[in-house]
Length: 364
Image (cartoon, rainbow, N blue to C red):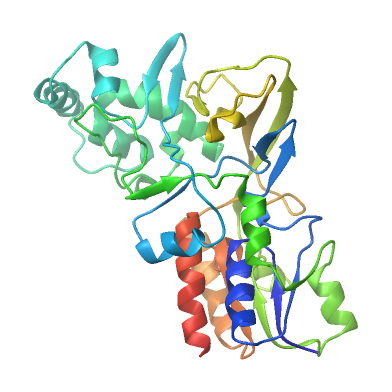
């Protein structure tokens, strides 16, 4: 009936559907949810585009990808400049001269470097055995204690001493007064929200929502010549080798009868004692002037089947298990596995698009 069945209406699936339809292929896109756009879905609340599954800021240095997404949306000039709250102190992120000046009263890059080097030397960590030692050996005691430790422990749900060192391979310190979180050449938010962008990508493509892949393929096993699968790779194979682990996120979202709650789109709370990791104020992504505001508190959570999987737990055990699933996937001649769940990889949005465009070339 179809040349391609594309499972998942997120970015990876939308790119495949768009490009294959342009080639004259007949595609069907399905999604379990009641909406398109996957985790970048935005819903309009009182004129504010709310990032329902967490903040998504598009950034890339890949001009081909930037030109590609600009076919479907006009991007604003939003610059991601998060704030970190530790007790009653406010710091700029990423770690830069504004951060160090507030923390130590220093003014020059040389003073900041010397302060970090002094603290690192006092610790005398030569072979970091865990995440805590790795982070301390990179940024010293103050930055680690105030801005890394609590936030990381909330994200992973365990003490930093229990986490492997390789999770933090580097902690970039900028010795300039620059609060731009990303170094990429291109950055912004699609005006009108991500959902409208994905709608344009899927123009002319048949889409069925509230549709489960396994139910569909059981009822119509020959529905398509080729499957593009963006769900969990272990679920596709019935968890026959075991279950891959993820971290999940729970959101508490509310509309408030004020025009501005925190003065910034992203504010991180780095104390372990504060249960949420950050508060997102959605209107600031598009410089909104609405009379009310919408905020979301984010709580990191241990993933269990039935919950939404967000971040792969890329430790050695999960890596080895995924490799076994990847070999099974290679043996599936008429299935392409893609996206963060299909490839068990944390992808930024531009990397998802790049992977989809590259995988399309392999099909040819």
